[in-house]
Image 1: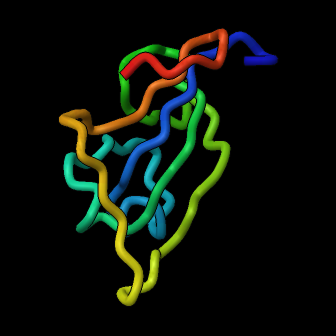
Image 2: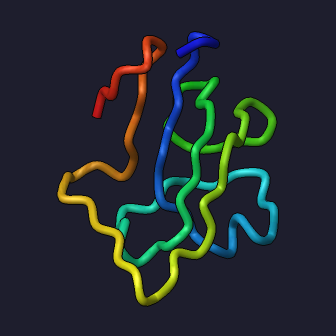
Length: 87
C-alpha cells in the first residue's frame, strides 16, 4: 500500500522458484504447491515476470507435517493499491 502497487500472494511450483525462472504463474492448488510467493504485479496480469514485477518474498517448502488450505476458488490473493484484499 505504501508504494501504491498491486501485490499478489499465491502458491507456486517449487521448480519454477528454485530454478530462478524469469516467469511463473500462480498454481490453483494451495495444498499441493507448498511454496508461497508474494510479488508486486506491476503489469497487472496475475503472473510473475522478472522484467516487470518485483518478487518480495518466497515462503519455501512448508513441511509435510504441516497443512495449508484455502477454501476459496481463486488461484491467488490480490491486494489492491490501498492494501485491501480484492479476491
